[in-house]
Length: 71
Image (cartoon, rainbow, N blue to C red; front, side, top):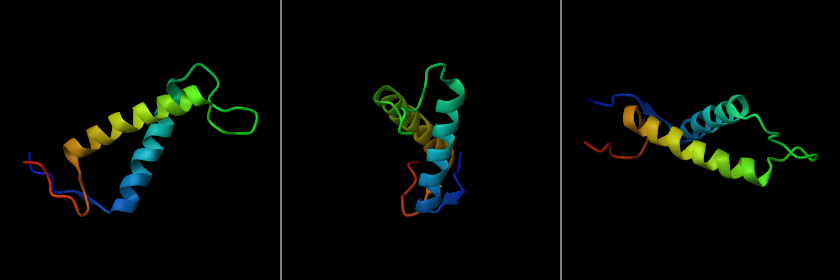
């Protein structure tokens, strides 16, 4: 499959961050934020795992600007 959609680096980060946050918020049954409004340590670790998965999915169908697609 040819990946013809090229995403600027800034938008790439914005996209995987927003998707990952959405997944974390809607898949979580536990509190995500502490009293100061920061993610709990456990949820931050979970967020990073989700980011890795989302970015992997994105790389399978999209190209980040400035990177050579793996073919």
